Length: 297
Image (cartoon, rainbow, N blue to C red; front, side):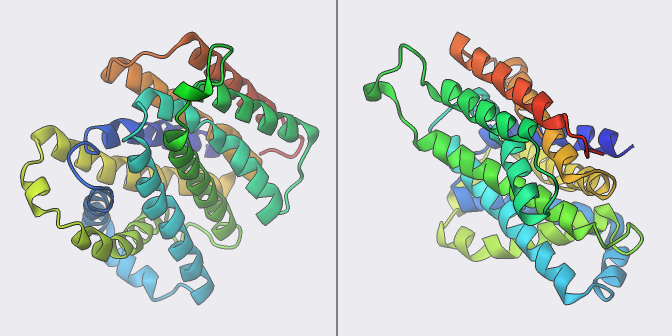
């Protein structure tokens, strides 16, 4: 059941690239992040407001610290890096570059959770980054003149933040059961904390005119980004993190770039090159290698 939860979570997470692409051209970065988290927080309060209040009184300072770290990396910095990166590269390319997430998550699982790191994981890390280089343009025909790495750097930072978020999710659920911190309530706490972090930077962008000019497609994207990608996906991921090992989470996070790419090609009608196809194959292959763990759940 844990793997099913993770599958649903990461398919939904992959659609974040599509939602952000409908918004990034109209609003500045922090405003985009703040508004998406407003929708996420409202969704959480609507469905489990009283439960959130009761749970908040029972959580320890240590648990709140981890929740705050999840808000900083998983909601705040992830959205900032992703939205900024999409100003330089296409959604399809960004979706494949997030294929670094399984390798980074596996590495953090070894460093932070002290879980067993096998040769398969090391090989998977190397193959993943080889795939990312192909996606960004390091093909036999690439020259330094047409290589612009800034977009890839931002998206890779977003992938690292996503990996930190999932690692903290596994860490927080090692000693807490679902009755103490239900997944939906957990997702709401993370969203509210991240929303507060974004408030002042968003106001400094003076976004009122841009918000007023946002088309209906942008508001629909906000609803999806906040309510589904954030609250629903987070809740499924927290439920999966409770039941699966860190390396299983790392392996299944490879679903994100695949779903992002499929959404980009089918919805945005973007295309990817032969070299990007090869990079995608390498990322998938690396995910399969990472998933082959003797101690995986």
